[in-house]
Length: 251
Length: 249
Image 1 (cartoon, one colour):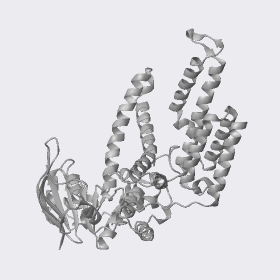
Image 2 (tube, rainbow over the protein chains, first blue to last red):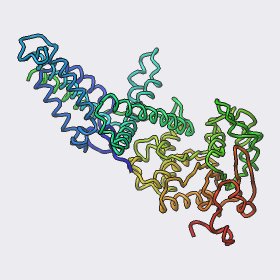
Image 3 (cartoon, each protein chain N blue to C red):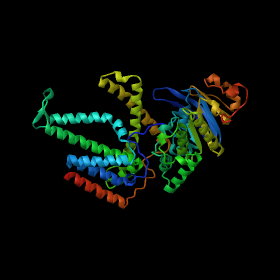
Image 4 (cartoon, one colour):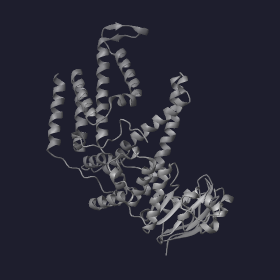
């Protein structure tokens, strides 16, 4: 029996599950753009609301941290680059580089923005079926005659569907390597190469098998789609999100 | 009346390996066939020709009188394929969604899709798990879900590739019972396996493959004692001269 990753869809009947997918996508866009203008406390407020949302749909924050631990190194790297590259009065000069107050603020802001987007993304993937995402993207792209909406929607839906599968494979590969004491190797480059190659091989192999299984069940771009419908709750949610984003500029 | 006719079928991989060599056989409607052979004997490759996942490099495969190469989509509607690895067959995020995948691909009306989902889940005994996440099911349940996903497309023929691999005892019993019930309901069953013990007592015909060729074909009673020659374990009841005994009994 497999364990769910944070990116897996979790069936449920929460308020967030019931929001129309088109609105959810709109919320991501609004929050994404707002985070570029919001203050640090504003981003923290939005992040806190996203965390509450994750808890509401039953995602363990401990599991999120565990699944995204490599991402934390990435954030530390971004923070360090920002902190040491921004202008301003130097607080200290380790290794001949200037660490500035402005750099610390800028680095924190960039990292918080990324964390907010990741949290919103997690909330979206864990409460939205890929079939609904596909239908929503198809609907959004319909007015654009030169964009193959159906194909883009199918590719997006499949990508979303298989992120948890790849995460699960990454977890298995990592466990198998730990079982053979990979941790005794201190060179991170060696470990990365030894981890990435089998993971990519397995991913491509499984992608081939899945595509064959889909073909066996007559899969094509033309199929009965998911019905999308919006109601008053979606519009109220939109108003709430816009209000929160405005507040995030002001606090 | 034959539902499948295979004439002089050959298949060569792009690296020049001849995996199927001049295969000839037909399948009657309602028949239960077991195709046995060692790993690499060509069983899975043969099965994949039945619903157009592979096309012959020589010869023809006719499903319900129509060439699979000419109309693979029709072949996929007639022959439902249950893969050896259920995990790679499961597409949906819930059991219900996975069963809906096939009927949605057939562009059926939403009401018809719901009806088919309900029927397939009832037949496979998964109705109580309709909203469960497929990847959290047990091995036997996953295999039954794979069967439900195929049944919802209402195929006449069900082709199983190693249906008992990686299953524990209860899982094997569940899947075997399911296959027997599907055969009793009039469906044509084709199973590839290297483990005859579990299923051979229910089969009408046994085909033994070796190196991409049909080495033996006939009723199980006639040829079961030859299996060891081809690297397939002869069932215990046959070795003991006890006749054909169902694994379920």
